[in-house]
Image 1: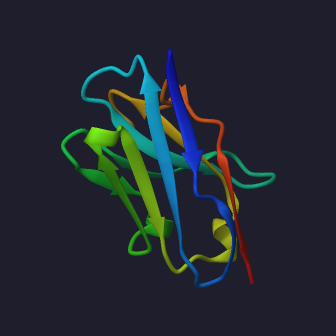
Image 2: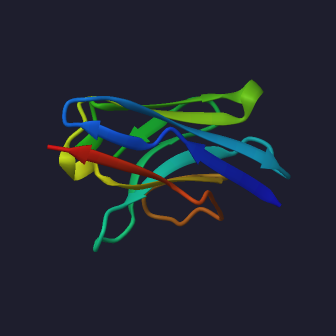
Length: 120
């Protein structure tokens, strides 16, 4: 079993920042990619960002230049630094891992999510 635990969500004013963390534990396989997805009320879940084992990253267009994904192999943890937050970033943010994490596929392992609310 793989466990993913997100933290760092909360309420922030527009223009503010938050840093999300995702800690992986259990039977994590080697060389896995980590990613962040989000789901806003009434909308489908969407890809936000992903980072592969070697550190290569990809982002959805709406967060480029504002969000930064990183990971710490020693801690089995991924981070999502979110700056210049906008009300439209409000969503539940989910961490996910798999061998490959890309916008067009559904990772096998998911966390339970953390709420991010951006007030205008």
